[in-house]
Image (cartoon, rainbow, N blue to C red; front, side, top):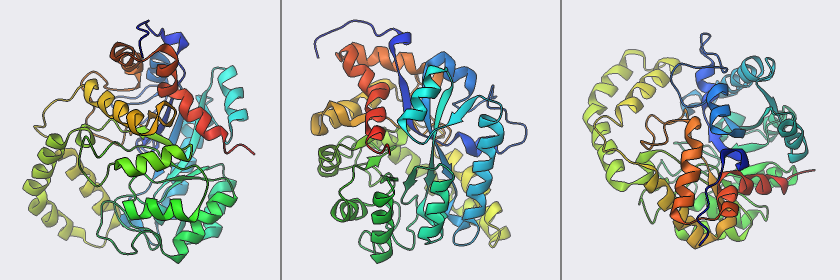
Length: 368
């Protein structure tokens, strides 16, 4: 990495593997063309050079087992009404459709389900979502499902159970992308044992630099890379530095009693509980130390050292996180990230891979 030339914005192809923007768009007052607050909208995407995005349909596990499907369908319909129908973006299911969107300067939108609880333990429901154009499933979120263990929960299945193995096998057969962000190490190992398809960790970082269960150990980074998989670096400072994670953990402890008292007000109301959890999440970052792009690029460097230049890219988690690196406040700042990569010594070609081409080539492996 010796070349030091600047990477002009118009030479960048920016493609990000994970955002939660649709969750905010459910608000009737929220307009994707220009939003107040948040991290991603049409105007800022155009300013930052974002040309393609995987939009996650995230449903809080509190809605499992019988209300998550409805919530996911509402999110899907929100994308239709707020992004696709006005022509701000177009749904794509393969790189051929994506190429057409890019040629016409339209934001190419891939869709993902975030949380295996959404499919209600049903391969038929998984296939229903595939028929709607969703091409990726994040196996777990913060809680175990009835068939897979999460990194944020106590082990229940020692990875995937029999149903989980059937689900990932069917995903492989139907060319759906298996996303192991949030999954436990044992779950990722089970996926690697049961399938031979490339897999992705859409928004995960390196545990060697921030030692938390949510991040990937070097062994799994290497195995994902060897399988021609993809790892999108997460921009959340809590996942970038262990000191920040520890600060957030202390905040959680500080507010936990108050949070439990709030929950007791409507213990059986998932909407109320979800809102209370969201409010607690906002308190995670109170008083946390600032983090800049340097910490993010450190994770990119490490993943490349372990897995090679072709496995890593962006997995911002924009609109799903409540703090960002100081000089990367939203999608409009992607040129700053590209410049910082160049300053770190990456060539133009390497920077282009990290900013979007690696994700494009990963997804191309799933084309029909």
